[in-house]
Length: 111
Image (tube, rainbow, N blue to C red; front, side, top):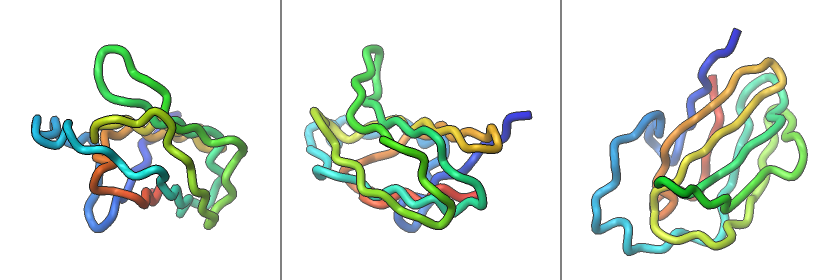
């Protein structure tokens, strides 16, 4: 049975956010993002891709992230602000969210 995991970005939740304003698309995200696993199980995989019809991989988790730990992922070839985060946990739960990396630099994966 698959369940959904929330991504708390900054002070708000970034679960299924609406489309970003066109003005935000001209901005450039930072060079890195911090991922924090606040669940009780390891995060096995995580990818961050650009939004759109031809998504571009900009960051990927290199190895499983234990519960309560954080990792900094370097963003490569990142342009614009709209990105998709997809992750899979050891208990087969997954996360899939749209985020604005021009505003958010820390993503907390929670229940």
